[in-house]
Length: 233
Image (cartoon, rainbow, N blue to C red; front, side, top):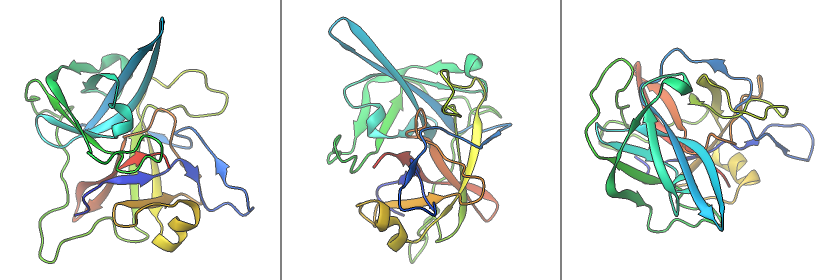
């Protein structure tokens, strides 16, 4: 399994012109009926007398651990919310004191190693609404997911159109297909061992603003497997 789980989805790849279209929203998605592994990450900090607030996502990977992007947690006050596909019905899950660990080589300028673990104060109670998602199973030789050109999905509360001035209340899901590394490198100067790229050339499903840290999931032998989290590069 890759040591760093990060997927780049913020640029709409596959355009015919030489200019890459920037699409800062989870657009062309569909309402998702359930995503028990999804966590909404609210984070803020105070600059002078102004409080700046943001939100992103994460994935519950054990009864007490949430995987997210370091972008969402480094130098921020963080709260974690789970248990519903409707924003107003989410339940706050308190964090363990000093319960945030970001990658030691995270770079907030280049977004390299953009990954972190949040430890909750208490174990979640598994239910249909809250449950951990699986990681790739152990195998010999190691099973490296996602496969090239495999379709995966991502969910989030991110903005949905250029005209939006408020995030949606309902959770939405987009779909993208993993592209090969040479094509990925045409757009992003990233470590091919830790980052993969994906795109949707048909519906232009995409995510970025409010979707950083959201889980990218594939189906392996009919089981949902977490293979990456959304990042910015």
